[in-house]
Image 1 (cartoon, rainbow, N blue to C red):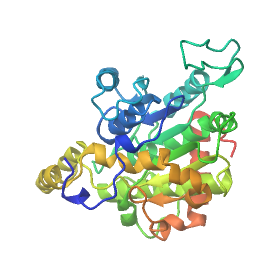
Image 2: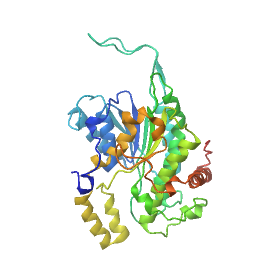
Image 3: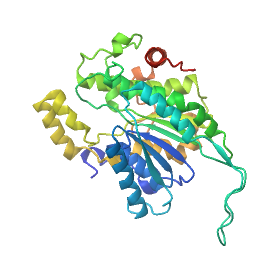
Image 4: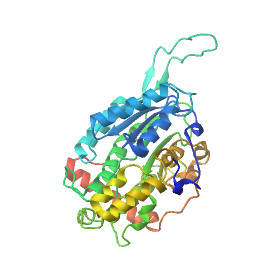
Length: 365
């Protein structure tokens, strides 16, 4: 289902994704909705995809479903049936669990050298040369999040919207960054081969105008309307991508890009949280969303384009730290708040302090 809101959007469907064989991706919140569609798109194009979910049954079921469809060549292009989906279970409301997951991925995706190579398998097959470097992490898609739902606290005693949507991704991305930096230096790498994609939203425009991101009290204030809490967290995701690009990466891409995207108005199932947050009014919004909003597959297209489009690799400096509203969209459309370098620096330093306070880890950037 395309939905009324997606009828005039640019498209980037599974068949448009270039060959992703020998690429590895992590998709947080990859067990349902947009995240599952992102995982399916990457795996259909040949990538190994690690999806991250909150429950064993849900994560396992999603991985098995996508893998079965790939084998039947029914999710899109049948060109690259070698893609597969694996799963991990992580509570993004628990910073220690996120840190442990990051360390596990550093080991799981570490770069190794194939000493023997793969011999020729038949006429026309070149095999793999001895000494080829294998592994690495090419894409981190930060998609997990709390929607427009009632506020709550995480295991760390933090407001759930800020902690799950932003802080856990800040911790995970900075933990995995050394591996991604090493991946960009592998032979045959080009600018834009390695990318971090933040799933933001046009609702970032609804964030309060007076935010400063200087104190824990500000970000842990759960007295706000759920829409404000959500929109503020989505503003954080754009600011994080921009500050990561400024503080750690290079303007020209340095083979590693950070990009934030808007998926569009998508019916993911999270809209059901509106009922808890807003009662009957939320029920009405939810009913409308089922008809008017885009499908998860179309909602995944912005992130898939940001992660894999050749156009991005052709001009990486143009897309470094960018915010995109849809595939192949114009740049610079984010709010003035989302362009505020002081705000982005404040958020980064605050995030570092809270990570240090809660789990004792010093973020080195």
